[in-house]
Amino acid sequence: MPIEYSVSTELDLMWSRWWGDVDIGEYRELFMAYLDDGNYRLGRLQLCDMAGVTQLDADFSRIWSILAMVNGQVGISEAHGRCVIHAPRATIYGLARMYQSLAENARGVRVDVFRDEAEVLASLNLPVDSLSALYAHDSFLAPSLRTGSEQGLR
Image (cartoon, rainbow, N blue to C red; front, side, top):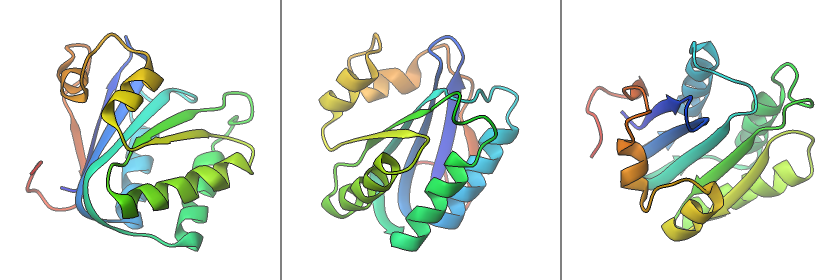
């Protein structure tokens, strides 16, 4: 299962953890599942932790299509979302920065990309001292496993 997510209405945050080989179709599945989730809220802060990704099947046109999908939500211009991406690996960081650059030139979601966990935590400004502590915070619902195989986190 290359992507899972969970929502905390108390922290007003949705996190997703990505690992292994991920293709853009799996992100589309995750995003559609999140939109259908009863805890979805337009504009909620999102954390995409891509620390475990070994390969991301993405190129300029695929990344552009994801941004168009995210920004295509009804009302996004009134409730700009923010996505914080944790991407410590060089190649994944580069692809995330491409997404960030495209987002800067489009109306909609604001994207911040960091390689370092401490920078991610500072950007989120939440009362935790590690991403592991964040994922274990008792306000999150059980993770929703939505894409890929049934293998779980590695």
